[in-house]
Length: 362
Image (cartoon, rainbow, N blue to C red; front, side, top):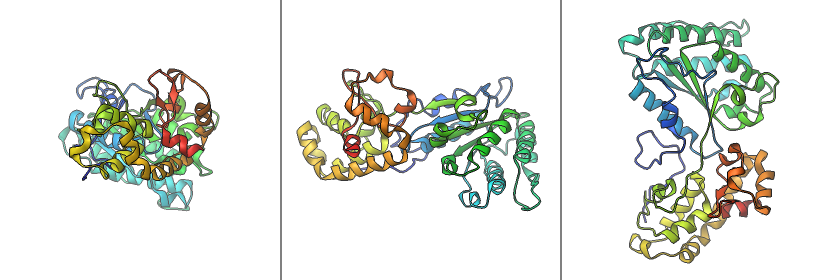
């Protein structure tokens, strides 16, 4: 059976996207209307952090935020690619490459050509203030702050601008990661007119430098929740199931959910395996036992997928093991644990682990 399930990041206009809770709409609502006072300012010191575990859809949500800001608010926005290769050359080279990428991406904004953004266009046309004598393309934190400040002054004459950072977790293990976090904090705290949005996971949990808990204490954190389940048939999981398996009955849907939970990647893989093993005409007649039998050959693959996710969230593995052995109310769990996507909500309100996650922990 042909299906559309995928674990790849989705473009903003993908018909297979399931709106998240919270998601892009919740982020866009934080921005004022274009003609409101203090254009482009969130009134949130330091910006926004989208926190979610691997495979939970941060990149997709970030893309939708960018599209909505430009389409609905006419705010120039840019996805800032992480200069991974530059990180090998040292901190100042990384900062210089990060700023260069941000400038080039913002210059490609679709709404930058509008007349009210003329000051921002002029600011982007100026050379970056590279200030490290040993490397003509390197930038100190002071230089980055100077550039962002000037950019913000220009942007505030229009509707502001937004820089969206994805993948900063890739530098979490660098010995200068704390210096980067501190630099971002002071750069964006001191600048108006530029709103940063960071999509990350590891850095949120691993900030340890005293006084530099930027993502934890300065930005506004938004924790992306797992796909919800509801008996009414209108849940986020049902929306995803209906992409290719619209005829699937309630018991069969519940069986797939028990195996995969609400993690989008695990549920996508589970539904893809089911779609490949059943004809569309047979969907309404499938019961839970049949679904489990059809998915039995795919269980090792699903276990391996869950194990790969667990390997990327080592700071949560001990907590998940405890949940596998204890009875805990789902409502009592910290949001940072839930946003890993590896804990599910049982019918009686307890926290439970999806079967493939439990298999991976064994």
